[in-house]
Length: 97
Image (cartoon, rainbow, N blue to C red):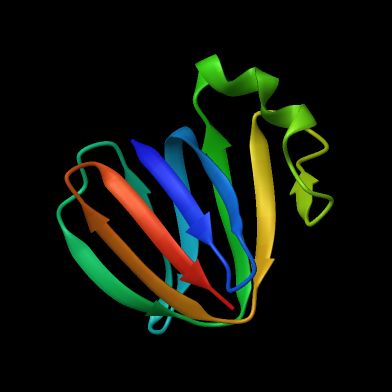
């Protein structure tokens, strides 16, 4: 699936991913490929991104706001203060604070 993270300043992430876990208002939840359409508010926490195998070259493009998992370089974390998520047609967009 395709994931885009947009902040008021810029689009900070756009790439194909295998999974994304977000801090929803009623608790954390994860989305995989072909997830049902959903709109959810997000609370303060970390977005966990599992990169698709084809996206190893993203390292140069990522800002220092992203943190890599020490045990798995295919996993990234991005801290948000809140926001909104929309998942539709295998594309997830996070509007983050």
